[in-house]
Image (cartoon, rainbow, N blue to C red; front, side, top):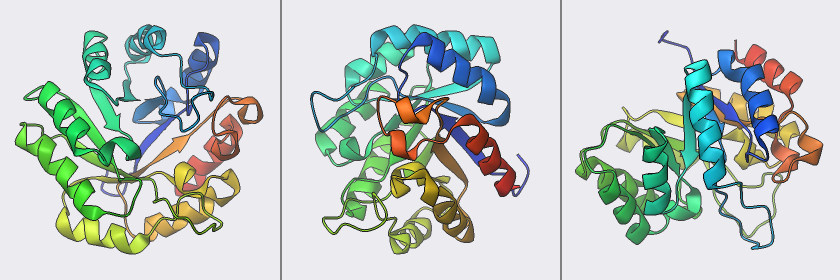
Length: 244
């Protein structure tokens, strides 16, 4: 990888249908390093769209083979992990809520012990760095060295312009603790509104993050989840152009 080249992870917040997923993958696969694939969604409201689930894993596997691209999915249980491995998916991430639960992190790390996988760990939803550090160490202790972390901002009861305030000071703290672990910024979840993504991205660049994870949808206005923060295909191309 070129010295200054950023890792680009992009894809829909959630896979909503085979047609939607394949259409997005076709348009963006050549410009990204990993395809973000929302298979299962941990939703606060049980009546919100929570993902296609198992059926979508066949589509993810098909896309991996078709475009020779690494696909990444979120896993929240050991069953998710086992199903991902069965479908030849070797890149998985832990969501912000999962990182907060040492019991679940321990179970998932045990399930992946000494496996040839790549793990991404999102910051915990609460600004407790020990939870983030502890999750990393649990996977390292299980023989997994291919680790990245995702900075997606932190929950705050104070309503600000950002959905999840970035707390850039904590990012600096993280980089001091783990200077060699690639740190990926997720401006979609930090901002909560795509109009703020450029602002967040520019600040992240000042801190020399390793890359970006952004949500992309062919028709964000009609997305079944997080419609406000997803870029459309034209906006995503502009996002990439601005990075250059």
